[in-house]
Image 1 (cartoon, helix red, strand yellow):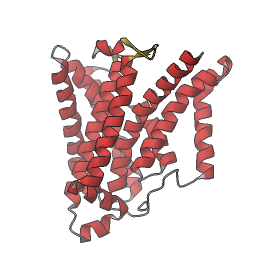
Image 2 (cartoon, rainbow, N blue to C red; image 1 turned 90 degrees about the horizontal axis):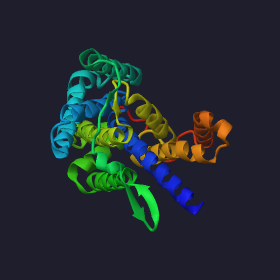
Image 3 (cartoon, rainbow, N blue to C red; image 1 turned 135 degrees about the horizontal axis):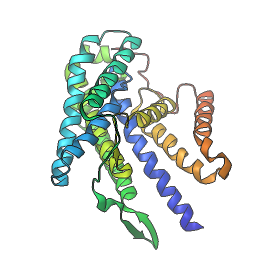
Image 4 (tube, rainbow, N blue to C red; image 1 turned 60 degrees about the vertical axis):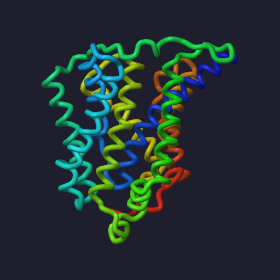
Length: 295
């Protein structure tokens, strides 16, 4: 019984970690640009197809290729699609993000086909390890460790580096940050590059876990992670990570605690939880002080 509980908790933390990373990538862009970037899902998808492209190469080469593709596409979309619209209203930016997402997704469907493809990335992560007498999947432990490392690294970057402090200032009050000498193009480009790195890591972990690829593979991750950013507090990076973790972990825990006949409706209970949180705290769990500021 205890073993099952611990394994269930590890599963919940692992899935929650994946959604936390996804929500963090979304929240990072919203924080500095007030843009809900649904094209983030395509960065995850492109990372997966890059792994397939480099399937015959060493894992390190495939990982490097995935990182380069995700960051490059993130920067290209920011420069071509979002920079010209930087002064537009949030609705226009939202439509633009859907348009970019649709364009990349359909281009990939036309190029590689819409059929599901299998990929065996880092199969050794499917092995089990023994921790305190309990057998746990190595991939889940790696997911948790990678998430913790990235969260600590991003926290250090935002608090201890010049560019990180500029990003925090821009998230609080972008116009004031510009008046104080913060270069908006540089700050936003760095935010998109970091979001590309986070999307690539999510792509690596998700492909290792699922073993499949298809052009719409990132949509569910981003949709649920966006819900996490809302309940965590739009504009708050800490809130985004916590909200994403809560939503992801809840989906796993409900699968364990719900009666068998109700398990297929677990998403309903997840969204009921979301509604309850927003009723209690409409601004989210950790709201951003600069939420009302626009670029």
